Image (cartoon, rainbow, N blue to C red; front, side, top):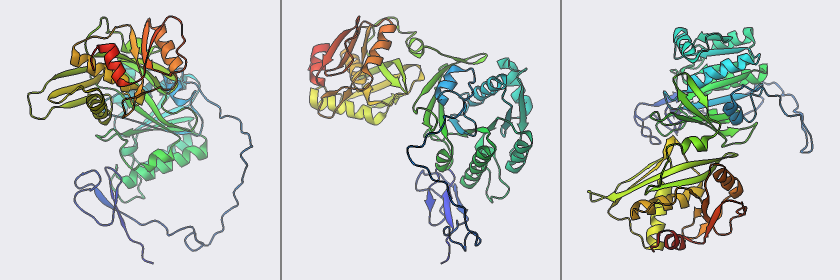
Length: 454
């Protein structure tokens, strides 16, 4: 059987049967390259006639001791990692250019070195002088961190084998070049091969490795998605460059909870930890305003309060505009459709703008009711009480559904001085002292009770 060559897009990793100038998956031009075929399978002939070893099997009742961890001293980073750095683990950190990935990892390298770990920082993008300048600005010039500027993967692995560090930081995986792969650095083949070699080396030598990855315009880590399956932990460093807040979010973690977040503030001396994100996100909210609603959300295991801002204005164009920052645009379209069809509140001919203040990104459906409240507040030019939080999920029928961890959300609101909450009827854990709870059954009742419309 003749093995056929495959053609892969360097931008999105989509496979094609033949070469073309434009990728059908992502629309990128001149991004498709040819890859050599893989083996037909694990037959004796394909494996050189050698017999493999027998694998040790265990049952589900077997108990293993939890892996040891090393705390960095950066509480927000340790929280996202699940309680510290695990030896022989591979971590992938992605984020937009200029968001602060290198700054965060340089601070982390200095913190881990202070804990007695031998740390090597390998950069394929910056010269050692540039890294030292950043270290001077961050006040880390005296940190015991070994630097290197190299892109040749073979040389990097040889150096790591000789130096035997406890932690290696590779910035970035897209700049690494394996001389046994016939493609340019940054291609799918190169990224996949470099990630595989570094991850395998880390597992074999008991060394932790942190790989920095660039992201595409869609916010996904560039290169093949198989890289995210190779590593143990995938972290995204999020935030708007115009805001000082940065959020480190875990989307995969084999040694801890997923969807955990750590909050940092970008300052002139680097990234500083934010121990109370809710107070920071609400620091500039001093008085009630139409279109402003406080949402009590849950990020991982942490309750976070943030402000949702909406603006509804007559559209000068034939087609009204819908703009969203920090939330799902498809979810916004659904909320508008439910308000119009179930509550009789039209938004035709009106431009709708929705923003999550502070550069925060929200993905949980519990924000539905807060978004609807912000839209109605902006449309009716009526401000909700400034001391009230809102959360709940909206179904297509207009009914309100309770959400999880209601007690934790209300506890965080009470801690920050809020005195009221609007929640779906049937929510558990609402009997907290000091909070006036308004239980709403459906969206029609919410519109009538809160805004006197419907």
